[in-house]
Length: 333
Image 1: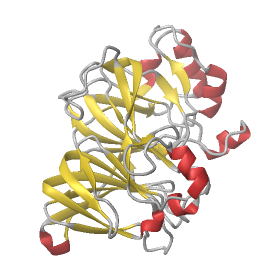
Image 2: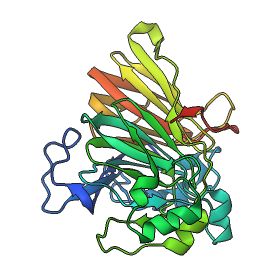
Image 3: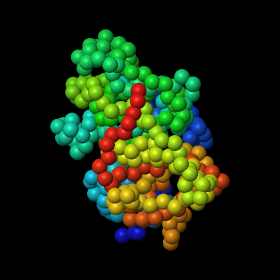
Image 4: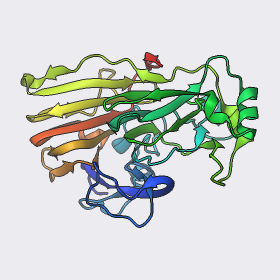
């Protein structure tokens, strides 16, 4: 078997009716005939774009390398644990819900779909809907769906660049236009569409309404201030620490030394996603990998230590599975 190394992922561009032809400011040089809603970075079918494993999918490597790739913290040794992607909403997404772990197991799925959204860019007035207004019941939601009034029962929030939104499984939600989102989620694509503004796509009311929870921990994550690290030229901030994922932001102006293990002693694959600037991911004895805006690099758990060396300045997200049990984050609506 080939020795694992930092993996540059080829984005998978997914057409959606609510998407856009213009993917700037993340992919300004990409032109599409169809409206693109999502750029998948670490899905099961996402393809490696560098080195001897070029052309392999992340699912194939997870089955082949198991814990060497995904790490000891992942629940399933043979499946990559986290899906990250960019979202480019140009119109409202459908109103939807994902099951939590308990509900997913009841319908034969291994786990549910809790996710978080980092707002990379936002135009004035950009909004999301997160959860139901206080006091709204599932029966009232179902009635409103049939009356084409579902939007009126949702809790709409203004969003701004730099916000982190936690979306627990069971939360009714949607995105409005005007933002660019980096989504991190459990590796699941179980989505129940509850309402779609009459666009004619299939709804999943029976499954979806059964998955809805009226009380959830979702909301804007209350974050601590960024801290200077490694000589003061670099800054880091914890965006969210939750049961299924940890996501951090780094602003690097000098070489940054990072590890694939956390203070639990367990390792996890690290996902690095560049949102501004350019840099290089380096591991001793391995070919360096360029990490530029819109790119994702997966650092296998077996690598242990690696360096991110910016070319001038690099802003990137790092996501991984925590090695110990974490509570849901503190949030506010």
